[in-house]
Structure formats: structure tokens, C-alpha cells
Image (cartoon, rainbow, N blue to C red):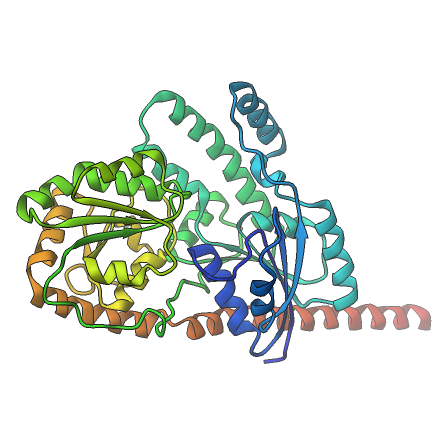
Length: 426
């Protein structure tokens, strides 16, 4: 495999890798940099700490460019105006505002200077790939927003919210279709994502050559304690499916658990909890921590992890991390998309509230079950979700496509030269 020059474009600074998006970007850079020259362009609304930039620079060249902070709609007039903007352009306004004209110029100039073999971009940064460039373009989607919004519609109540979701879903669908048509490959994280993208447009070149992994050293395995104190839910509360999951668990599942195990506690961990989530702590059985530097002690102390998501998509790091640590988990079907797991062996999967509560109760009171499931879960992530193996698979598929592209270009050039010579001979 020949070394490549790779440009990664992101609207997230991926270090430290503390959430799903940043973890995916950082781990790709980390392992791709072992064989290739990687440049990272981050287009952000604030400058990250210089020490973090220095740490990340051991893996790649880092370029930081500033853009204005995205102003989300507040008043009814703003919402209406931004919807019209989005509808006319086919791009959600909050994606358009995250774009930088200066960054587009920088990408064009650096492509001329460095001759990147591949340019990859995550999520909304895929807009930069719509510009013409002589490089293999990969759009990395961590989930398919069109499908996420479809799932959200099944849960959300109230005609205004449903109308807004339906309206923006049409815009998001156009955005995903149009960007996908302008790149050479859409890399997605689950087999379900392939089906979802093909539903948007069967002609899209989509590949499940990526997935999410887990840092097996950081999330090291420890056998479960003999006693489980309760359950723990982890997730950034800025991502709407997470507060929805926490509230759903508390209101619809937790009462049944408490009736069976009155001493159990429910711990909610995640940055920027909404007011509704914060208010859960008024119940003495609930703790809401907000952001913590290290989630591992809280997950281990609880003894059981839960992921009762009703919307969203993609592979969830919270699930893989609990499995790696030896903390058994109960999850909804959506939360295990892309995982080749068996309910009752590696974890429990339940979409019915009563079944979910019953599974949580079993794990709280059956230490032998926790021990058996924890060991099976750890074996699974060791086999299927090691970052090095994941990135190598992605690297192999992209490098092969880049090599074929180069051969085709060389063949086309030879054909042109032969044609010119023949014409001259006449």
C-alpha cells in the first residue's frame, strides 16, 4: 500500500476524544497517520487550548480556522426566515452558517500545493467536498439524519413539533442526497446506514467500511462487583436523543425497577443537562452529575448501564464502552444498530418498557448473570471493535479505490497521447 496524502476536514476539534464524533475522527487520524501523511483542517467557532493542539500534532499537521458562531433560531420570525433559507438552498441553515469561505479557499490552495490523494470530511463538513478537487473524496456519516428524523417522528408529540420535523426532514434528505452524489464514497458505520442511504438514492456509492471502536486499554475490563448499586446512563445532553432517553427511562421504566429493587439508584451522566433532566435529581433515587472528566468510576459503581434510546442512530460509544469495562448493559434496538450481538448473551435488548425493566432488575439482583454477560461482552468488543482493525479496513478500501483511480487516469492520459500521435501521423 503506497503512502497517501490525506486531508481530514472537520467542524469538531477531535482532542481530547470525549464524545462519539470526536472519538471517530481522532481514531481515524491516529491510525491513518501510521502509514500516511495526514493534515487536519478544523473550522471552529473558537480556538482550542494550544496544549491540546500540540498533543494532536503528534499525529497530524493541524490547521485551525475560525468561523462565526452559528446562531440558532429563537423567535418565530427567525424560525420562519431560516426555514425559508433552508428550503430554497436545500441545506439546513445551521450547516450553511458553519461554512467558511476562507476555508474553501485554503482547501483549494492546499490541494494545488500538496496534491492530496484523499480528502475526507465528517457530517456537515461534507459541504466542503462539493467543490471540485482532484482527489478521492470520502464523506463520513456517523448516522443518516433522514432515518434519524423518521424515528424521531414516531416519538415526538404535538403537531407543531411534528410539522417542523417533517419539514426539515425533507431539507435534510435533499442535503444528504446532494452531497452524497458529489463524492466518490460515502462511508457509514452500520449495515442499516447502507440501506438508509440507498433508500435516499440507490445510485449513491455507499460503503460500511467503517464502524465505531473502543479503547480497550482505557476502558479496561474488571469483573463486576458482587453488589450492583443501580443503573447509569451516559450521554451528552446537547444531543436530543440522550435527554429523551434519560427522561423516558425515568418516567416509563424506572418506577417498575424501583418496585422490585427499592434501594437502586439511577445516575445520569452527561454535559449540559436540560432543565427537565436536572429536575430528575429532586427524586432521592436519582443523581444528575453533568459533565465529568472520567465516566468510568460512575459506571462501575452503578454496576448496570442502560441505553434506552428511542431516536438517533449509528453505533453508540456508550454501549461499547460499558461492554469493554465489564459492566452489563440493557439497550433498546436502536442503541445496538450495527452490533453483531445476541440479547441475553452479550447484553439485553428490549424495546418494551416492561421487558426493559425486567432485564434491569435481573442484572441488579443476579451477580452470576452479570459476571457471565460481562465476560461475553468483553470478548465481543475485543474481536469486533478494535480501532486499529477498523481503521485498517477503511484504509484498505480507500487506498484500493485511490489506486484504481490513478490507474484509470494514467490509462486515459495514454489514450489521449496515442490518439494525438495517430492524428499527427495522418
